[in-house]
Amino acid sequence: MEITIIYGTETGNSESLAQDARAKLTKLGHQAKVVDMEGITVEQLKNAGTLLVITSTWGDGEPPTNAEALHQELKDSSEDLSEVSYAVFALGDEFYENFCQAGKDFDSFLERLKAQRLLPVVLSNGDHDDTFPEWVDAIAEKLS
Ligand SMILES: Cc1cc2nc3c(=O)[nH]c(=O)nc-3n(C[C@H](O)[C@H](O)[C@H](O)COP(=O)(O)O)c2cc1C
Image (cartoon, rainbow, N blue to C red):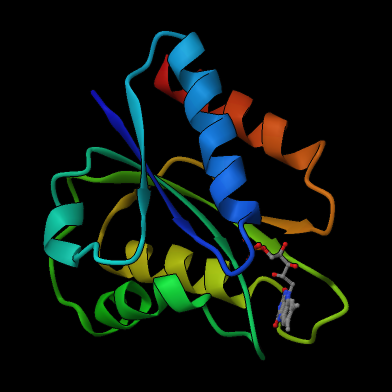
């Protein structure tokens, strides 16, 4: 089944990691696509199958601008997402009080809507050189 990788970004880090994940998962024989969170609706997520969420946190624990609408819609939603399997990779910086809050929010919103969590949310500080490849490997392992 195709993997949908959605990203929330302010300065491009999450988007770049999303592209890396797509390249690696494709190499491993999966079908994967990268989609900007902007313009995605909860209704569309219902058919996502396997959903990977990669998002930074901005402002004071806020989602990035392109993730705001989906963040709000998921928060308010009562859709049943039990057909969706998901994992969240949260980019952030421990300097900030609300470390990785947007990623934590997406993880808990999806859980509340009964989506199946593949892996615990990863809260990644600053440089993601180790945490990100490990996360993609763990997902590939889960999907194999
Ligand atoms: C103005 C500003 C506000 C930020 N606020 C937070 C925050 O509240 N919590 C957090 O964990 N990280 C915060 N960060 C760190 C970003 O999440 C981090 O730099 C991330 O790598 C940005 O990724 P992006 O390019 O995908 O947006 C902030 C960074 C900036 C520049």
